[in-house]
Image 1 (tube, rainbow, N blue to C red):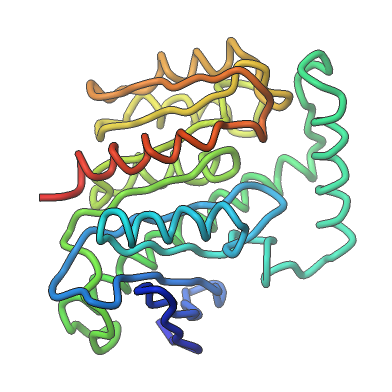
Image 2: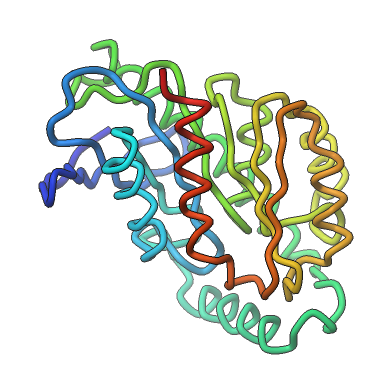
Length: 270
């Protein structure tokens, strides 16, 4: 991890960094408590489609986890997002397509993917999973003073959480299912079926064993209600909960933030 800038505001240390992997250089942000005196849990935040690591809700979550729980938080720009956009026209097309789906409402029917879109989605997930794993390796190296880097902050105690909805689940669920260092996960705004790699996605959901909080929207324009319920059924964790609210894909109520705090405090602290 190569830290590029470091700032402190209201007790939160923000470090902007780049993570070098075997395939790419990935921009990210690490937030941690200014007055930390020892190792503590870290929550990885996976942003949704068409946004980036500094989306307002990502910043809100990160600051809550630091201030309310005394944890660290970290976010990466997903492949083809944020500072990693290499084709601005394609990125704008994806944003327009998303807006059109949201405007069309729940009755628009399942989204279809052509071969190029399906391949791009699968590649985004593949790279995203590998990058989150590389980040954990790097954080572990910083925590122990290992070869990854000299310690800069006391992040992690072997207990990491993951938060990611929508595209954050498309990448995050395969990551959590294959990464034993993740102890608990908030996932959602996603379902079974209707996506490239749907069969494998379902198998990975069934393989989950860590505590999972699944957050869905009853009137989601992008995820059919029965697909969301099927995902909850498929999650193999014995400790799982479903929070579902009226409204569309972008209308998860703000009070759900309190549930995230309580969930991670319960499963990561102590």
